[in-house]
Length: 561
Image 1 (tube, rainbow, N blue to C red):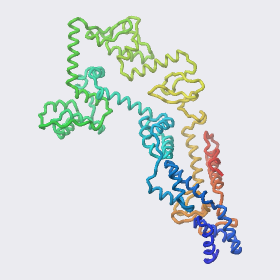
Image 2 (cartoon, rainbow, N blue to C red):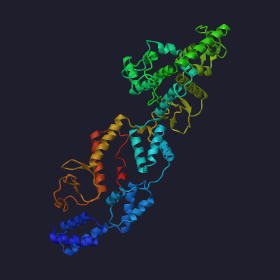
Image 3 (cartoon, helix red, strand yellow):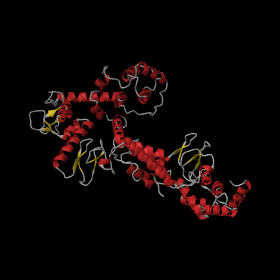
Image 4 (cartoon, rainbow, N blue to C red):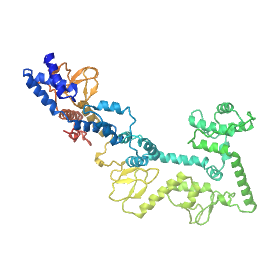
């Protein structure tokens, strides 16, 4: 080892010759030369040190270009000219850590990106995602760096936990149904959906819409309705009655209708702070909110029926023989036979359950109930199911070349013969499936490459072994680490030193050189060999099993030399 005076002579000389080289690198080179050639003359040692440092000494321009590239990879959303000007204003020895520290304190100019462009990119990358979710994420991502978008997409693909198109369609249908009773309320449409509301909601044996386990959102929705309907009654009284009557809105409204006006002035009508997707609750609230209007409409219908009876206009259902049908309540077969709505619904459901998609007349004629008549009588969900079955039967009968059946919902649809994927057009399905194996689409993988639970377990076992082989552990605190550059004497943040080659503790530089572990190595070669050995060990432990996907295949491509 060099004397203290000799060391400082080397250090002082090299600092003058290499002013932009970091002190730790100069110190490592001095120690290395001293250990490898301790008996050489001072001039020869200096020459060796200079040669080593010169080989790794970049030019001033190279330093700045390297700094720019590193900063660009970190601040890829910042304008290029701004980063260029920043780097050019610095000296050659200005390093990346100082640059990051300074830039983080600045208000950096970012690239402006249109959120609609981001949204389209997200739609292409995540075709099964909820479009409203993608729109919100696009609004966020347009102000961030492309790296953030890449990270978002990678996370979405790996976790697959984003809201889907199915969620969106389901939500839109619920919103549409709720709108029938709220924003788009129409008394005649309401009475088609709930023909006898007084009997339906007045039945004491009817299951309550709210109970002790009801969602708090539904409770608040009901209370908001009561607050706005009874604006002369104090909220505390309404809250108490809500609890005492166990959230039975019909009973609560009957009592509040008879309650005196406790307030001189009514409360200001409050906009609902919450909405509800509980359809029975929304129906009941709508009925209670418009009870007088609905009552008048029912009275009008009753008067209409009396008028029809007076002028002998009532018809009889040829199935159940109900003689009280007004012309508006009649449903006809293709030959004019008259039926009530209930009989049409029951007949169609019974025939469809037996596999029929044509619905014969319930009388003794050769007519049938047309699809148009069915659409007037049946609820939308049931009608959609029937329409799907009819479409499948018609496409199958047409014998169109390339017709394929979705394995998830059974819808037959024409496809391009050369395509290997069935993209279902049924909005309740929208699945993409493989024509050959019938599983969910697995492109770009082939059918025999699809991994199931056991295959995934085998692959994960090998991958974990490869990761364990690549990472080292501090012998003192067991912290995991991977070397990016430098010599093989690794210093942990706990202070312990470990050899990167043999994983043993290192106390001084005598651990390296002269047949022992090398101080400097090609890290790519060393790491690749360890990973390959880890994979081979894992395969040996698994035994003679078939691997649909070998994670070690082509691993050398991830270790460029």
